[in-house]
Length: 220
Ligand SMILES: Nc1ncnc2c1ncn2[C@@H]1O[C@H](COP(=O)(O)OP(=O)(O)OP(=O)(O)O)[C@@H](O)[C@H]1O
Image 1 (cartoon, rainbow, N blue to C red):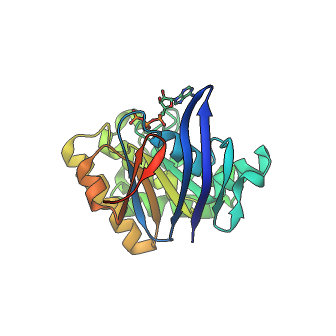
Image 2 (cartoon, rainbow, N blue to C red):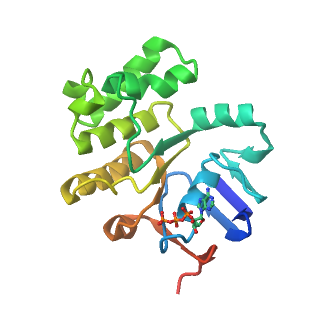
């Protein structure tokens, strides 16, 4: 298994949000996480993505028991092994598309030439070769989100987590982005775990995990 979560629990003060979550995800799967607003989807994604620690339980990712790492070790692991795509792209406005894509590679101290080459290849693959020198404000919403996908992939992560990745896009751009996830899975075996309210995207996924009241709802 690429990712295994065992008996995850998380509360905010007295409010239990994740009650007892266990799941396993294989390399090359595209998994969607769905559920009503407030069901705990983002909380679960943040814990699986090591951005937040659970109150109890464990996550093993690419053979690493992630929460046994201290904060510094966890930050390094996250940068090298995990890519993120959020609803709002979070690109750095003062850097070009190419520089934004390079950033996780620079943070990981990879050789600059290799990082720049991989970033350029990714922008090319995502149809953005002629946008590499543009700043985020000079790109359309769909282009900005594809730059964010390229940035998520630059370190060849074990898994990409996406939280409402198409939530801010019109339906045409959303559809293109969804197709891109599946193309990248087919081409590179890239694993994606996607929180979404978008029913079309959830329906396309290999598997859907439904959260209900802090627990995984069993398929009927
Ligand atoms: N930092 C926080 N402090 C306190 N409560 C929080 C915090 N983050 C989330 N919550 C609460 O935890 C519950 C689950 O939130 P979460 O964002 O995980 O839900 P979600 O399923 O992603 O919802 P949505 O679909 O609306 O984004 C909600 O009741 C929310 O108000």
